[in-house]
Image (cartoon, rainbow, N blue to C red):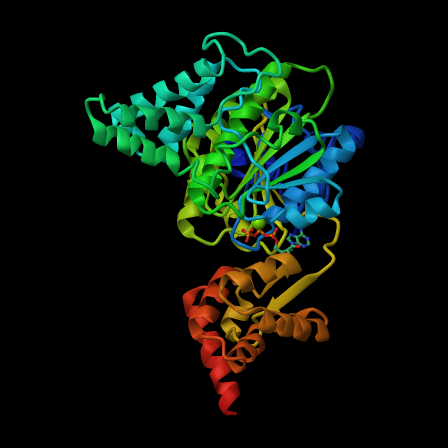
Length: 506
Ligand SMILES: Nc1ncnc2c1ncn2[C@@H]1O[C@H](COP(=O)(O)OP(=O)(O)OP(=O)(O)O)[C@@H](O)[C@H]1O
Ligand SMILES: [Mg+2]
């Protein structure tokens, strides 16, 4: 009997043998770049190649990061920015919705700016722009954030008053502003409208009143963050190392979005004015983390930066829990997408549909743990290998205070055996504290809870924590809110309560 038999195989049969024609990862010359000119991210899963990121072979330098809460998006962004700064001296501006980056930026010696604590942005700053162009941008922001577009008369009154305020301050609408000339503020604009109302000659006083009311929201005493002389020069910040613009203490989403749009508009102008530079690498990364209102609207300048950024070496990093919140024009145009742990099928379907990866990759993504990722890269030449590959873990500088909350006691054996079920959640001190605060838990209890975690090597089972909170008189509502913010599903939350209750009785 012979052990080896020669088979006749048709070539189309060979083509079906995927392992021959389709390697599981891009070849190493696409992954392993010159370390002095690229950013190390982590090691690939199959061939254990150290993956270093550069955009030289990609369609553009923009990056999107998606994954559920706690998956490691912000951790990745911090690691990435730190290394970009080492390698290319890259500046970074973080438009920080939730104040998530504040502590890290302070610790890294960067600049932090918190509006509401005496820092102002004058929405009418020109940053070298013609007043007419700035008026268009302000109107664009109002169109995105309010329903003013539905009220053409109010829109017209606002636009005219803004133009008049520039004229009164001595600017010529269609000319570049003379250097050093102080621009007017929204307070001047409302003043002009008020005057018009007092004159009493305007035909539609109700329209005028509504126009004033709209603008006053941004110029009222105490909430006039955008209606005073600027205390920060956004244009300069684009070349000031690491900068955190903390929007978390602005009163609401509208204010945060207004600030973010203004910042993007100014950065875009700055980018265009500086033009191309001969240096390698990225000059400035602009980070939008969970800023869905800004990332989802195609009129926002996030889209302009995506379209034009490459030629100016400006990169945009968009991080989101929900990929469908990111505008199609952004999502389908970024050069690199980092997919961390994804839970919802509809997000997975969306990602698979737009990035076109295999079911094998899909199942790998559903099993990811904290910090593990799939990477999609859009190469600028056509390639004969898959665009998506897995990396073991994003390798970062280890966080100082990390707390691990384990689900082991609560999960059933079947869930414990299921690789797609998350067994523990890790948080740094800042993010755990802010989740506790946001759930309405008092500071005494928070101190106790962190101390308890500290006694146990910074880890605890969720049911023990819930017991402790119940003992301390914290309401079930607050505890539910906390567990939801950690990322637990309602069915799991019910189990945690049942388990904690049984401990109580036993
Ligand atoms: N690659 C990693 N290596 C080690 N620790 C990590 C890694 N990624 C994340 N972590 C830790 O996991 C926790 C959650 O990460 P992170 O805050 O980045 O999540 P996130 O995706 O930004 O969540 P959210 O959507 O709630 O902001 C943090 O304590 C972080 O330090
Ligand atoms: Mg985050």
